[in-house]
Image (tube, rainbow, N blue to C red; front, side):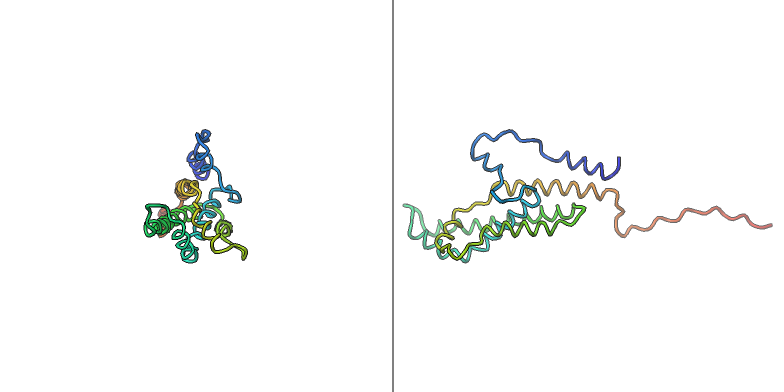
Amino acid sequence: MAPLAIALLLFLQAQPAAEPPPASAEAASAQHRPAGAPQDDYQFVAWCYGALRGYLDLHDQVMPEVTRIESTYRAPGHKLADDLKVYAEIQKDGQRQLKVFQAALTAAEKASIRPINVIGAGAVQKGRSVWDAGPEVTKARLAQEWMSWALPARCETTAKALEASATLLGASLKANVEPEGAPPAPPPEQPAAPSPN
């Protein structure tokens, strides 16, 4: 079997089987992609990266308004400092998730036989654009949206599956490639010319 056919077969075997229907509405929403998000796994992960990057980048802009909102509407028995720590933890976890997405995107780009990074960049921009607020959006409204936003659960699971598949495919495609810097094969030996008598 040709090496490319073997690689394709291995790649297809690594794809998950059809999933049974979810048991709850929450599980169903975790399986579906948000409206406007790409359906292709590579582009979806790029979209997730862009949406999360846009969210994290808004932190410094929205925190004064978030602090005002949290100070004004206090839940009984909760300390403001404790509630604000949640946003710092979200930032830290977001940075970790960005690394997961970047690793998956890089693996997919390396495994692809054609350049796909331009497509990925477009999907990143599309994801980031979910945070493009027009002039009619007040600071309070933007802060409220920011406070209640959550990255779709499917982003991280899709990224991990994409990286695993791409890594397997990339390794399969490189199976018959000579390693760089390998010494050239010696030329075949020529039979000795008969000596003249």
